[in-house]
Each structure stands twice: as structure tokens, then as C-alpha cells.
Image (cartoon, rainbow, N blue to C red; front, side):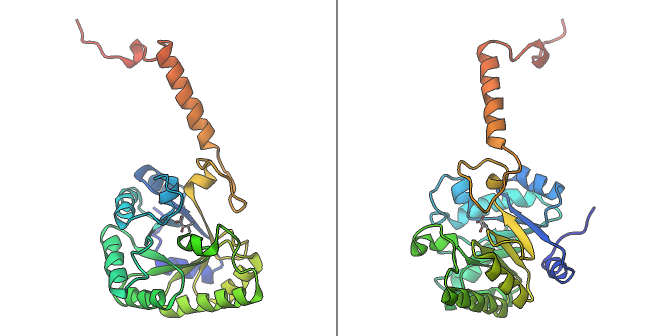
Length: 269
Ligand code: KIV
């Protein structure tokens, strides 16, 4: 079996210029499939609010909801590094709360947690979590928990001053002890600058070709999402596949073509 991926593996992959492959997953079968496909990092993202629970944003997602999905993903994974998102309000309010909530995620099978932003409280929380042995993945750029502050899902780092601020924030999360950094929807040239100036790996989504790795949302690349986005590519059209299969099932039941004696049980005379 290929070697277990750890935070150290990701660091080595950056040094050896091997690309890191990451994807979100939210349940047992998708975790098994991601592992079997050789994905390096699986994130139980708070995007599960949109993809699995039907919320408009990630803001309503509760820690308990992440924990529920995390435990299922844990049971399906062997090799990939398992990262759990810290949902809105589970960190960023007080350092104690952040450490406690991150601890709950680790006790439920996460091997690292992810937090958005680089406010002084988030940086302090990263230091405290790392201080008790919890690896932290940082996340900058279009951080969905701040969507209302951004006024929509827009490219971040548009002006020179925003770019300097993002570079500074990236250095700050690294200095606080983050082991990797997700960069979401920022110009490719800025992601390149950040990637080259950090010693920790960067993992992009809508951040161009120069990051050390890429992360995508399960539903987006497999064609389960209703919407399409510029930063994703559909590798399958599962929505059509599933709809077609369900229609065929419904038709066959209605027309008495399924089940047949082949799918039925009878006692021997
Ligand atoms: O919640 C999520 O899925 C994420 C990824 C898009 C990085 O944070």
C-alpha cells in the first residue's frame, strides 16, 4: 500500500516539486473513492453547507455538522491526509474556543484543521493550536466565510495594496505555524509570488498554475453541482448519469419490468 500522507509528506512534496492533489469529500463512499484514486489530501470542507446541506453560504454550518461528516470520511480513508474545516464562529472569537473546537475535530479523526483569514485572533489561535500539536492549514484570498464582507464571490487581490496585504497575511500564517496554505480565487501571478516566498506548500483553487498543489470541490469536478465555475473543470457529468439512471429505474418499476423473477426470492417446494 502507498505510504500514508502526513503534513511532513506535503512539505517534502513542495521541496521535491511534486504536485499535491487535494479534494473535498463529505461521506464514506467518496472518501474511499478519493483514497483509491490516490488523492493526497481530503478536506471535509464547510462547503458541505452548500454541496450537501443546501445552504446558500457556508456561514450556517455548525461544528456538529462538520463532525458528523468527518467521522464518515474518517472511516473511508486510509492513505490521504484528512483535514477538517473549522466552521464560522468555531474560531476567530476566542483562542480558547478555537483550540477546544479544533481538539474536538482531532478527536473525531481529523489529522489537521483549516481556518480562514489572518486576523490577529486567528494568528493567535493558529499559534495556540500548533502549540498543543494540532496542525493547521491556513486559507486566504476568497475566503467564503467572509463573503458578505467581500460583497460576493469576487476575485481577491485586485489592487497592488490588496496584493501586498495578501502576501503579508501569507507570511503571517506561516510564521504563526501553519503547515500549508490554501489560496482561493486570486490572480495567478500573485499566487506565484506567494508560493515562491513561502517555505510551506500552497494549494490553489482558482489561483492558477503556480501553486504547489490544487484543491477542488467534489461536486464541482464530478458534475454534481448545479452551477459551473471558471475555476473548475468537469471530469464527469454525474448529475446526468444519476438522473438518467433514476428515470430508467422509475420507468421500469412503473412498466413492471423491474423487479423480475431474477431479483426475487422463492422458497424451494
Ligand atoms: O470548504 C471548502 O470546500 C474549502 C475548499 C474550497 C478549499 O474550503
